Length: 110
View 1 (cartoon, rainbow, N blue to C red):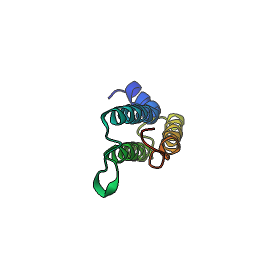
View 2: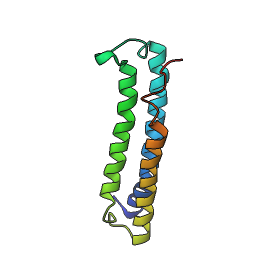
View 3: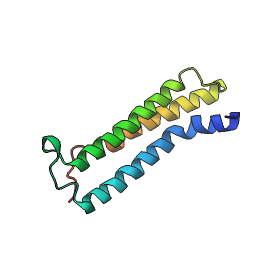
């Protein structure tokens, strides 16, 4: 991976992952409600759609934290770029929690 690509991935990776999770969660919600996944009880009385909609953001949050862990020593970037990448990835982690915290408690298909 060349330096330009590494910089782009380091700086934009966190929010790109957030946008991907956002899109997949809301597309999955619409599809799941349309197909009836939100109405049928699954394991433990929890709808399969709820399980999927909770696991997707948790996975995205874990991947964002993994990216933050990889950036802990700068990832071979200049100090200012490394700090910027760390701050942006941290902000993406906070945005993931903020945006998807209510997925587990709001009604599914209304």
